[in-house]
Image 1 (cartoon, rainbow, N blue to C red):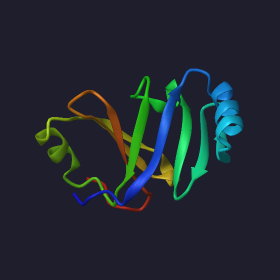
Image 2 (spheres, rainbow, N blue to C red):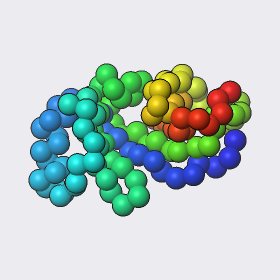
Image 3 (tube, rainbow, N blue to C red):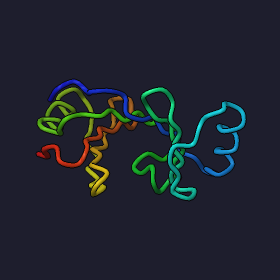
Image 4 (spheres, one colour):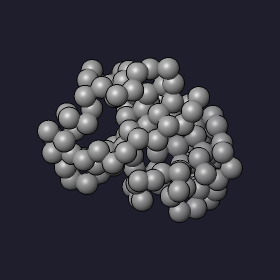
Length: 122
């Protein structure tokens, strides 16, 4: 498995995404990039994204902040994650958007690997 290409996204698991949207837009001046009602609200920040996600959309994370790293593929990811003391939680195919592999680091934090559609899967 190669090193991630970039930090693709960071998202906050939000109990009330619409209210937080008002805060991030008004207080921080973030510019809306994409919105799926109150499920996923995404802002462009430099060459990455920051998003607010409802609990359902954020699963398996239930709170906190999640880093999403863009990778070319998921080859050998399971072996490397478990060998380093982490846990693979599963993969979500998002069709034309790509796929996300969710994992838990040794301290219990949720991290995700994202690959665009059309790149190899294990």
